[in-house]
Length: 193
Length: 193
Image 1 (cartoon, rainbow over the protein chains, first blue to last red):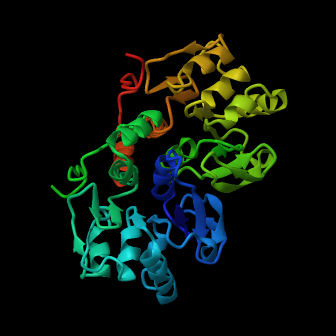
Image 2 (image 1 turned 90 degrees about the vertical axis):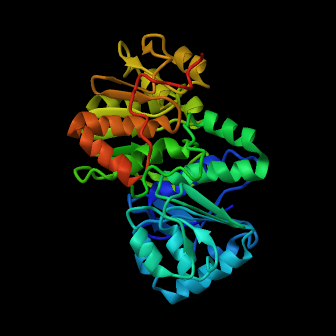
């Protein structure tokens, strides 16, 4: 389980899914950035990361969003690196504008995907070759799971666990976290009316 | 805003409230541990912290829970240090078994408080002089806000924002995070039936 961090990522985008996926004994969570070292979230949390060269290439990739994505979505060296990780990964999960990064590197071409609602126009503008779905809590298409804004990442992570290990496993984790799971990926109360 | 971390804290206990409170422009988030340096969460996230001596003494204190609390709740030097921080703080917010730490140091004596449901028997056993409320999403008593398990910390943080800045401010943050706020502190679907 490779959690990919970068400066100005949105804290809960990463740590919502981390909290859910950390309850799956089969997964081992590790935290990476492109070059390793410390990374600061948009909420000024400083995290120690390993360099991405140390990641399990075919593991599950988690990509948060946040204001740091604006810079990276137009930075070819990062996108080249991300495309490599996304291609190799068994599954790719993005939260919020993390989908803009997966889109910008071309990994989502021809796939259905979603992102958060406040930044939807920008995300769509990043790459037209993606089937953007505005009304969705999360979207699963093949190995790609993309979620709406921030807290939707937890709902998606539970959906991912449900798809891999069965619904009762996901419900057990939600109960453990005392989390009211919004379990219908098509129900999106934050989409434009 | 002093977020107090320790080894084996539960990741979302801290970063749920951080995500909410980070949207309040009036607050500046800082991350502390008793002695400073790196701290590893129960989900193996390594966070760089400042030593607590650098904290704004009368700021707002946030105390997460997690398995690290079991050790600290019976470790007098930590409890002495925590009592000092809690006494000085303008407000104290705890999530999950973070309440056991505030209770163990005596800060919650004579107060009403709650904690997560799976560990409730243990938390109650830590200190009888607290008015433990089993059926509550969160409890506010004076300057102390205590929440139920893990994700309840986000609901409490929104309740705290609502109490300080008005309900529309809290609703605006929930909308920004695409978070379905469980806004009734007395409604607890995870309490024993």
